[in-house]
Length: 319
Image (cartoon, rainbow, N blue to C red):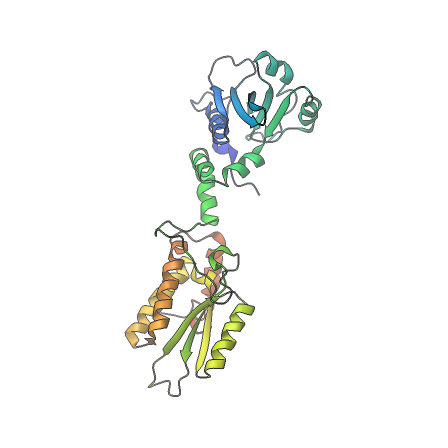
């Protein structure tokens, strides 16, 4: 599914004062890709040229400079592909402007007919087509590309960032949470694993306070089982409770965690020094992923958790 809505860029043939925006976007995109802009966009008669860029190629035989004629076609509002009529006489335009290659820069797609024409000219000149999918793919995979996307597609990028959250740059070091068994980086996996809190068994629930001995985080499944077996082999006086790390990374759940821990401390719940230090480390490493908006999926998940009572691990039936 497309992420960037090219309709955010004003139409090219309506005199609104913004009709040059798509050409300016083309210039900035190609500069970002490493091309040197030779001829900037202007509002005069363009003679079939929107801009000219230069590519420097370095090889065994030295450096070669290739000039590309760039043709911009902004048809996102009609949704139609770019046809041979829209981009006609390509070879003549390229050669008459002293260029060696052609770049089609389109907010939709090249039609089958245009693609066939270009393929037929490949022995005479080089060509490239940047359609909406290729443009989007380049922009969303680098910090510089995201800067350009934010300038020309502010609404689309804001929505995309909400649904694809990145850790906030709060600390000098990058957040890290490695599995206590295999040492894989949990924060870089689709499944962030589980955090397990081990507490002492209690005989008298009215007089004895909860006492947590260990806090560990591991990959789900085998690593979790290996660690559990190691602890149970050492002592049978502990019981465990766990939580999905991906759940704790949701802002709503994280703040619930913080409040629960504060309430526990107030009520006399005990953490061993080791457990307390581990819990602090966990919360510090997870927090950069928390300081953000909820994604649409997480919002629905929080609603679902609200229907589950708190004593079963949900958010409901409190207060």
